[in-house]
Image (cartoon, rainbow, N blue to C red; front, top):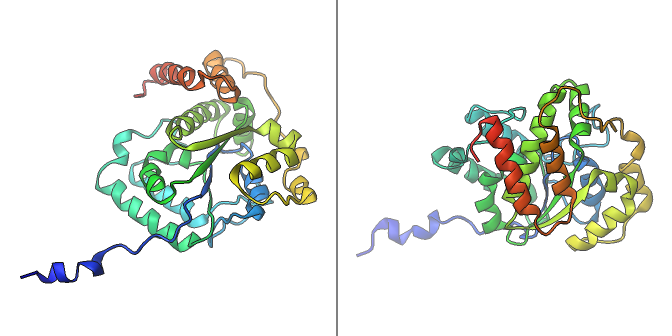
Length: 285
């Protein structure tokens, strides 16, 4: 005779996911043009969900991020004693166990509630360090996911962060390294598109149009709207001279060069550079 648990097993089953399998992820470091890119792509057939992060003085045109998702990422980082300014990569063990599993369940419920059956645009710089938390969910719920990895010169990023009072230039350079290396390493099993901050500002319409084609979005691009969204005059930090006395110049610039190159051996080079940088910092690879 079947038990009550067996008879009513169907009631405990998870409801089928209504999520679109072809989500688009913008995975980039802070101050790397991710908001401008999100603002240009969203009108072409994507949504950032119900809970949209409000514009702020530092980003008056909007962040194009989901506020609820960002808050959940912050809560996870706090639960492991970290935050977005933490320079070190998150230890892989932090993504295993009961705490990580609970946050993954919360993530799925949040995604279903925020996006439903619409095609998501998911963007939060914290994800560069949190991808191991996401990877199992993406493989199950977003099997056709596409990633855009925008790259900006590390010195520009560091100065931009410093002038907003978030970090010192030294800290910004270190944070850039960890974000871009982890973002590249953890997305290798997914379909990816690389672009640069320079391309986005110098050729905004062409860059957005090419990305739209590659992503299967509408190519009915509003040229005037794209130019308003991606305004090269907003580039306040073009400072490519390496800060005096700052270590790891050759190693950091080699990481940048490998990322923007189309070298067939890019991943192998980045693995070697990652081992060198993390080894010098005393971090586990």
